[in-house]
Length: 290
View 1 (cartoon, rainbow, N blue to C red):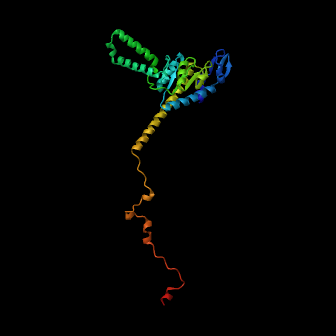
View 2 (view 1 turned 135 degrees about the vertical axis):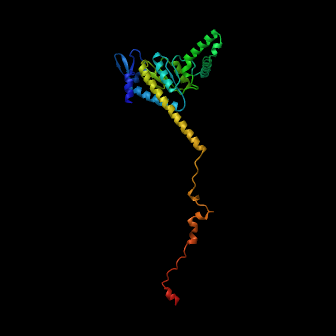
């Protein structure tokens, strides 16, 4: 934890916007003002980041995806790099209206992208005229640029991570309409009410964005590992159910009544019991003989 705090401070995540350009709703997350620049409370940043990690890990452990959205130049490289490593969907070029609320249409466009990729890879596109080939290549580049990051997202995500709420309002509105929880890196000029879990911090610094996205992607990887371990344990349980262990016999049934050699000692007790001695009457045996 100490190393993470140090890394965040070195990345400049605590530097906010100028005092003249701020949102009063961010007042609880501001620590002080230095040279007319707001300083964000690093404790609130860590608190939001830990809550976000917990949510991401929970969502991915349940087998759902977390989509990362950051179309500003400072966030594109970090999101593409870390999301590709953790196999999470992302949007870095342009948020198309209806990406979530009209997800069926988006899936149709992704199927079209797969068809075009197949035409190019197989070389079949060379059989078309030059004009048609140029149109198909242009269509393929356009769809690939806008939707390549979510081409493996077969269903709606379980959560959304957003960098800069002012820039990604359309994505946040769609997530809110569908009840998808949102995690947002918010600067002092943003509205924290747009996020379910706000992470107050500098959303213009490439280093700070990289640290936050990296931590959330690591949490997604940990959640995936949990899901894999749970699935493996479930498969082992199913295999044990196919070959159940033999039932233990009760201690009462360890002897068979038909087997005299293993007959219970209690059954032989009456046959082996000795005749009880006569009570002492005080008269000797010699006297009784005379």
